[in-house]
Length: 121
Image 1 (cartoon, rainbow, N blue to C red):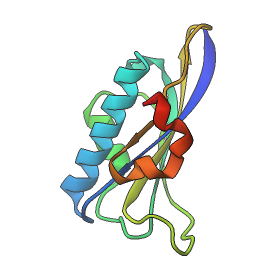
Image 2 (tube, rainbow, N blue to C red):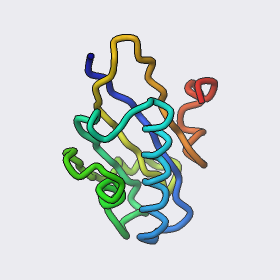
Image 3 (cartoon, rainbow, N blue to C red):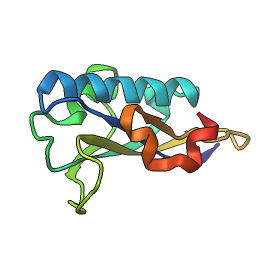
Image 4 (cartoon, helix red, strand yellow):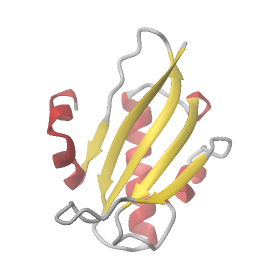
């Protein structure tokens, strides 16, 4: 087993608690499915949100789906002019076998953030 890190992001259609929770849950479930992980494999997650999202913490969604023993941190994304709005990002650290191939996950409008990962999705 070794320590890995992956990136992911999802877009949100509105600054609303349910929209933020729904997008975060979708992102986490896709990350876990594509990387064959369970919450016990995860060491930590850092979530960032763009300035236009402040209705809820993404960590709330993570806790609801089993990340209750995982250290979670939420932070504000740097407000770069012209950056894509309404985006939740994640940096996840986890353990997997030495042969594991990390699958980064970008959903919704966030897919345009990392075109270099597009072929892997």
